[in-house]
Image 1 (cartoon, rainbow, N blue to C red):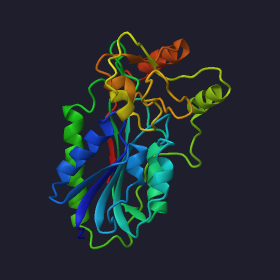
Image 2: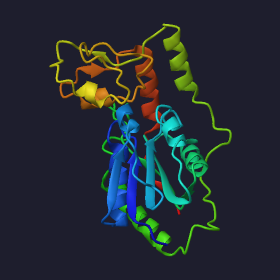
Image 3: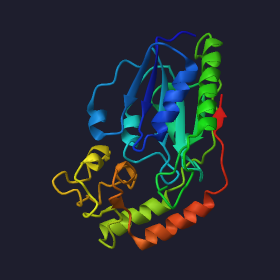
Length: 277
C-alpha cells in the first residue's frame, strides 16, 4: 500500500510523547515527514495539512487513565477517509487504563483505519527531584522499541494492498470508559473553592523568565504575574514545574503530595511498552 508522507500529530506538554513519536518516525524511515505539535491551544487553531494521503501517528499522554480532556474534542473533530493511523499513548508507568481504547475509538470515528497501536512509558508528569516516577523515560531501551515499532509499521503497511477488509486491532480498554474519579474530585474541589490545586511560585527563586507561561498548554498562567494561575484552566500537567530553570514552581498542597507519594510506590515496578500490530 502506498502513502505520500508520514504525519506525526502529538500533544506533549512535557516532551515525552513528542520523543516517542520522533523515534517511531525514525523507525519508519520515510523522507517526507511532517510533525504537528498540538500542545498549545493556539496550535489547534491552525489548519492541518491534507491527511488523506498520509500515514498518521496520533499520540497523546495518559491523564488519570484517559486521554487529556483538553485535546479530546480536537481529535474528535479530525475527519478523514480511509486513512491509516497509529494511535499511541504515553503513560507514567502506572497504567494506561482506557486511554488507548479511547484514542483508537476516536480515530475510527473520524474515518481513520488503525493499522497498529502502542502504549509507551515516559517519565511521569509528577516526577520531580526527590520523588522520581519513571525517571529518565523514555530511556534508550524505550527509544529502541519505538524505532523497532516504526519498522514493524513500515513492514505491515508495505504488505497491505489496501485498507479494505483490514482486521480490527484488539486494544485493551473498557466500554464505557471508566470515569477518571481522581480528576473529577479535583475539578469538584476547585469549583467549590475548597482548594486551587495549582503549582505555587516561590517569588524569591523566580527570575521572571516566563518559560512557564510559554510552556502552559492552556494559557493558565498570567504573563503579568506568573504567581497567578487560573485553577479552572490548569490541567496539572506540570509543564511549568518541569521547565522552570530555578525550580520556583512547585505543588505545595499537602494532600496532593501525599497522594503522589502513594502513586510513586504504585509505579515502582518497571513497565514495558506494549505494541499491537
